Image (cartoon, rainbow, N blue to C red; front, side, top):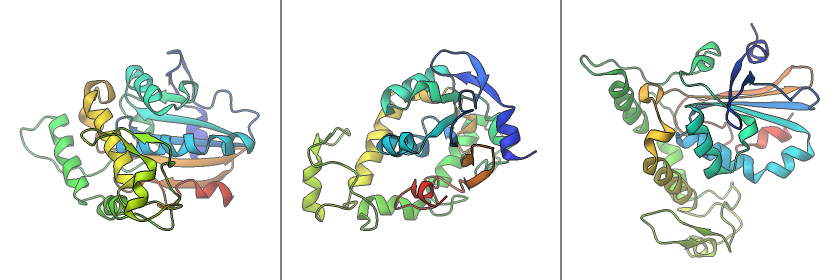
Length: 256
């Protein structure tokens, strides 16, 4: 079956009301359908992707794009995710055991097996190795980009915005000018947003990750036209690999 056929037949629990529905419910009249299959809802990639979608929400609405996301977790995970990111709970569905990810043949991540370790412990070990770049191409380069800045990427934090990312003190966006200027992604700007995400997840770990077995599972992005024709797809190859264009993850919306 095609990707669209699989998604058309997939039903999952919707975060907003707990009802099990087709994940494409309500997308019938949309000019385009953007379907995001996310890893754990407490994963760096899921949180960062949701941040970009919030940033581009007016553009998505202007283009008539219906957005649906399926993330690994349970309804509690999804509710906390939406509270933190602002992602609409009507658009988010949960897949506790990553069944859809396997159906779509998305990258399951590093899968080294260690005798006598439980599945969750094995997943933790593999996740740590992936964070070090093993079985996760491009991860270290993307981590370093968050610290050194990126003149090809837009400014991420408004000058008057205050970012709270413990253990750092509250930082006003204008303070990043001292690291290099304004109008582009400044040094430490992206790293600060990622630190804020990490603080959020670690403080509510059991909520975001009720089952650690699927920690290494990666996701994918699929954009369809109104008839279900696949216009764009991206399959994540590693941690922080949720976008082909690292400078501007949603640039594909202008290319189709």
